[in-house]
Length: 498
Ligand code: SF4
Image 1 (tube, helix red, strand yellow):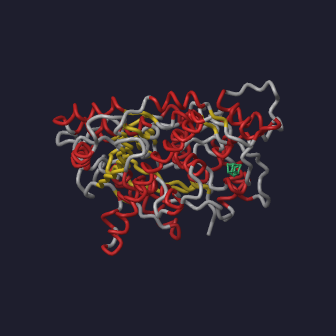
Image 2: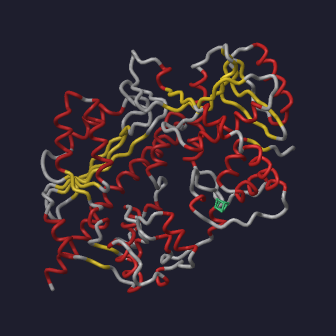
């Protein structure tokens, strides 16, 4: 099959010519697309189909890479008909493009690139410029304007809202016409890369994750140890690469006067001494803020580009599940409550009612990275005006369990610069199978969200098992908080006994 320079290859070349070479020479990426990436593709398709409704009664050019000539012929016929065209296909000078939408106006043809993102990004402009340039090579087309269609994040689904307002049309004509001047040179260079025999020599850099995480990172990056400067907590990517390029790759190579933040300093010292650094007074202060009963709370959420429910916005976090462990006194028994909303219903009413039924009326609410849970509760409050006050009062009671770690009261060398609950728990509570995320069928929130979204297509035999997997994942998040707080408290008790 002929290897064309398609838009996706052009985008790869813009990111990194080594990536372009890999992808156009049949090199299998070591990292397969995960379920999240597949879901993003599916969402892109849904958004693309919805955007066609902006210009109804168009002609669809069906995808068939074994019959490129047919796609081009059908496009030529559709151009003559002057109807809107979906996926119009053009081939010029070895460059193959498929344009999401095209419409004919009195001044010529407009082209539209559809993105499922709610923000217009630089690479969206560049995609459009590549399409525009290829269309401009076609003598039968008089082009008028170029647009990138993005999702309008302020869209609120309700009975009055027209679906057209789900989209924002961004006019990028000035950009694409200016950019088109540089494109022939880039196309020429990319074609040469695709056809060369050897892998281009490109060093790793910030481009490996921008604008998209590269699927070949395992090949190019290899593995690096816990003392790699790439693990330094919250250091800008550019600064890490400045160090890397100057030959500084591990903590012990950092110059003594190198400007590290307090946490980065603790990270380096703790690694070198191979022991945790603990500020017991600060941990004591943190624990002294806690009032019983303690409610350990965690939500799982889903997001949708195209809202399903009334008063839902695109990409709004929609809580569909919670886990709540309650401890009434120090070392007291744990009570556990959990809930998953019925799939297909707006979850915000039922989850609010269940939460308010079970959460104690007073005492501290502990979460890990509390802004997420606080925002979930704000979402619930907005959609339940009759329970708004009760819900918002919960937000006055939060204490964030990530604080002792993020503020450096407790740094352990095995954290490797990450304070996520999945980094902290196994270090503080090793060898406890019940607390090991790896022993679960669902191991992260992204997967939980995807599985919930697809509950309607799970077969009946697997349904109950899937539901219990969802419960188990969320339950571990709150049990993890219980154990982490127990561990912090035990440090304090040991301290008092000294
Ligand atoms: S990992 Fe980085 S250097 Fe390697 S192909 Fe991808 S973008 Fe290029």
